Image 1 (cartoon, one colour):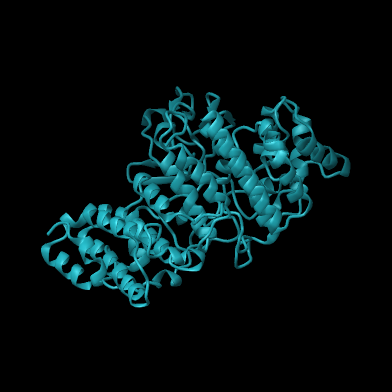
Image 2 (cartoon, one colour; image 1 turned 180 degrees about the horizontal axis):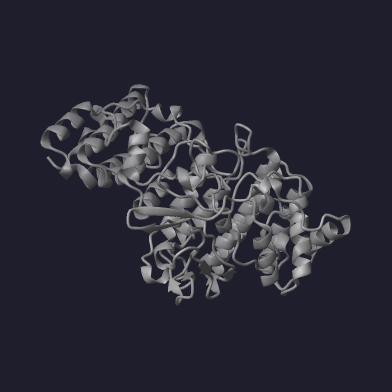
Length: 509
C-alpha cells in the first residue's frame, strides 16, 4: 500500500465481516510504499467468490493538509501453502483520454486548475506545476484528480473538467504517484525513478551490489567514486514519491515578504525559464524560508515553502529535459531536493511537528545524490555539505555500507572544483571522517583512513599546508574510533600517515 501516514486510516472488510484495521504495519511518515502481512479469520471466507473491500475510514490531516486516501498496489491471499494473487492488471496510463474532450470542457478545466479556488485556499497551479504537468507526468488517475478537486470544493462536473484538462496535456505519463521520483536503480529514467521494486531490502544488499562483499575492498583509489553513476546505483533508502513533494499549505504572505522578492522571481522564471532565473528563484525561496525560521521559528512553513519551490523547479528541469545527460539539471542548477532536505535537517532539534526529520532528510538528499550530486557546489553558494549528509545518514537509519559510500563519494566530491582549496583546513574532507570512525567496523575504518592518508601525503608533498583546525579535526575523528582498532592496525595506520599528521594520531597508544 502507498500513502498510509497514520494509524487507523486503512481498513479491510472481508465479505460481511466487521472492519479490520490494516493500517498499522504500513504506516510511515512519508507514506512510502510498504509491504506487510495481515492475519484474517479464515471463518470470514466463503466457498467460491469472496469480496475484499479496502476503505478509508477517517480523514487524516498530514502536517496541515488532508490526505485524500491511499493506494492498494498488490494483494495476495495465503491459505496454508497456497497463495492466491488477487486483482486485475493495472490500467496503462498511455491509454487514458480526457473524460470530456471538447475544447470548451478542457478550457474550463484549465481555468479551474490555474485561476479558480473554491475553498478559499490557493489555486491548484500554486502547489503543482503551473500547467499541471506533474499530475500527468506521474499518472495521477482521473479518480484521484476528481476526488482531490472535490475535496477542495469543486463540483463533480467541475472536477471532471479539471481532470480532462490534465489528460489533454502533451506530457508523457512516465512516472507513477507511488514510484519515488528519481529513485536510483537500473531502470531509473527522467524523473520517474526506478520504482519501489528497485529499493534494496537492506544495507548488506547495498554493499553486495556496490563492492560485492560485506566489507570495503582493502585498497580504494581516491577517485574510485568517479566510476559510480549515482543515477542508477540502487540503495535501500527510499526517496520521496511526488506526493511528498507537494506542499501541505501555501501562505500568500510568502509572496509579499522581502518586498515581494519571491513573487517577482516566480514570474520571471515563468516568463523565461533560464538558468539565471532558476537560480534567482531558488535564492529568493531560501531567503524567505530563512526569514520565516528566524522570525517565527516555523520549520513546517519553511519545509512547505521549499517544497513549493522544488515543484516549480522540477517543472523547470522537465522543460530542460530530464532525459538529457544532466537530467535537466545543468551545471549551477538549483539543488532543490537538497534544499527541502536541509529544511528537514534544521528541524531535527525542533520540538514536535516534524516526524522522523533525519530519515526524511536522508530521503531527500539521496534524491539529490541520484539526480545531481552537486559537482562541488549547490546553488546556495555553499558546498553540498557531506558532513551534514553523513550526520543525517547516521541518525536517519543508514547502514555501514551506505555510510562508507557517502564518505567515499563526498570526500571525492569535496576534493575538487571550487572547494579543493579547502583540503588542508578543517572545512575540507577531514571533517567527513568522524561518522565512519564511529559507525564502520575496524577493517573498514582502516581502509577509509589509508585512503585518506594516501591523499594527504600527496597534498603535503605538493607543498600543501595543514591548518591547526585540520589537525584538531583529524585528532577528534581518530579518537572517535581508534579504540576499536587493534594495536597492529593502529601502528600500520600511523606508519602509512605522512609525518606531518602522525601527532594527530596519538590517541589510543
